Amino acid sequence: MKTQVVNFCTNEAKDVLLSPSCLKGSCGAFRSTRRFSIQELSTARGNPGFILCSKLDARAEMVEISTDTQFYSLDRCIFGDGSFVDTGTLVDHYLDRNESETPIDEK
Image (cartoon, rainbow, N blue to C red; front, side, top):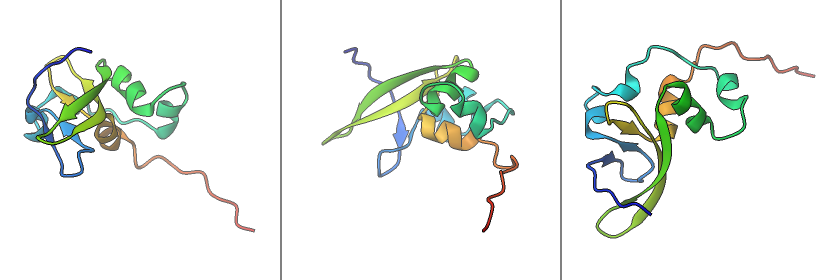
């Protein structure tokens, strides 16, 4: 296991992970204007966040972060500028919420 010390930002629940530049809104993770449908992210086998990371030409990895008292396992997507964000936040940002939904038949 490779140990690396990096600065990061997280929330109280420790389920969001951002590099400091992403918290400020000036990072590679949020530069693309493209949006993705849920079908685009779930057509291939694997984690939709990892698939999105690949589509954005970034690298996904599993990481453990530590606070003063505990370790937390998360995944992150690392971009060419060194910025990173957890894949859940990434999917939430890039998911096309305007895609037409298939109507449900009411009987």
